[in-house]
Image (tube, rainbow, N blue to C red):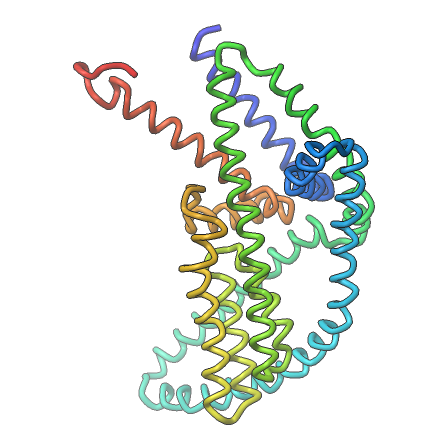
Length: 356
């Protein structure tokens, strides 16, 4: 088979695979979640296997401990967070009133300074912008609902995910060995090398970033609770868990936290303390947590991650969000591989360049 035909074959395969993912995205969530759990816990299963524990027994013990810990955390947090959600809902009218009272003088000044034609254009632009925002939010929530929060999908997530995780984790090595036998023999060494690089990138980011999110969630939640911020634990945990999106966790937490603080406190020091918690967390993440737990070797730029998450959520819903980082890692590794070959090729060096 010629090189052009090989390229067409692989490109057609990728297009068909992407089309299937798009068509089945509404039912893939528990399988993707189970695969993520199995991938995350595979190193632990390998260590137990090295110590003489059978793969089946080790898989059972690991998943029992993992899901027991997850359920335990939910049992402890849900009642507490439920009360904080109700408290936050009660604060929303106060926040709106504070915003209205501070915005009203500015609006009155604008009415006095601007001509009527400019005010009409400003009102039309504001109304159009608000309509666009509402439509966008409605669309996002609708895609998330259809992708993973509907009752049937939530039930399938609870029931199917542990089963998928068990079988994938138990047979992980067998699956990878079988896939290895399917690789084209001539290209197998290069493909294995790139797959190892992809695995290192995904593992370094996902496992490291999960640790960063957990530390930040605890830092934000405890810090805001000690300050006495209403719904502080809820805001802190949410900001920490969203920190897998670069800068978004701290920015969103700071905005919500300051909004609650301005409505709750009349003195300046508690408001400044709320801001200090998020500034401290962001500084700690940038200079200590991310360099130590994630490192700079994963090759995933923050802007690339944000784009991947938004694109995955827009195209495939919640399933796309789960797949965004692995797909971004694969594309990043393949782009670097292609760029390396390009820089060592006559196409880059010109007619007098040496082939690599």
